[in-house]
Length: 371
Image 1 (cartoon, rainbow, N blue to C red):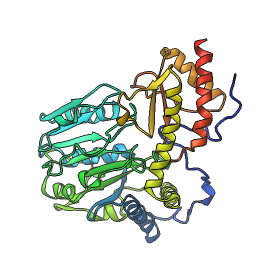
Image 2 (cartoon, rainbow, N blue to C red):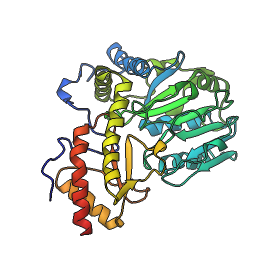
Image 3 (cartoon, rainbow, N blue to C red):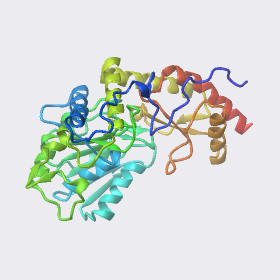
């Protein structure tokens, strides 16, 4: 039987992700529009982005937060191009985005002493192989595989190199051991359901020290430069962005931060995401035709929930088309480089009730294409 109840919000995309519940663009403070981002009103709004992010995340003393160009990708590339090369680097990767960083490090930066520590989709690499005398680059959550690191216990407290973490689908949804992370990047359009094109860059004091004591052998584009005269450009982390940001997107981000605050903070956002995962897990446990791509439950992502289906690639595509045609789920096909299957966003902007409504529709669509 075709289900009768549909999700109120069918947006389950893994990026850009659903806007927060109750979102209304008319409620944004747009007083900065049409003004220079370098005027006092613009710099104040951008400084708020940095300060309120640090406050909500509970960052340690001395950590800096900056708004940078080109989404999470830009933030990661800034870190790679500005900091790598002083030490050998271990790149830990198990899905497409992490593998992309390894490709950039070896093919663009052409570092000869880059070591690949990798695994197939669905599993984590052997984290005990990581040498923390080296710099270490990794994703906290594999957005295209649904596999996350379970915690930060594997990261050495007495590390000599830097830990550079792409955490775009983890920040505000997973517990982060900030003291063990020297560079963390994320973007507004993931867990907070913000708008694209802007990245967030979090630097520890150790990362700042690297920037101020090491100059890469290669030239840096202007949008990657974080130092001048051997000193950190502090303005980047106080609202003086490298290039012109969208002040409408800034207003949208501040609205999202306020939503997290009103919800009860990061812990409440994490709990909401975990509750969403529990809905999908109960459905998977009750149906033998669907499973998680992640093989170890301890590594199961609560944001980018990746699922395998006992069906061929064409049947899976038919499922997603059926669900879209019925207006119950948009953009839930697996990432193009990932194994065939489904990918459902479970971050805090998604309501548990909508996931509960979606699950019977998955079963209905599966029956339609495999009957």
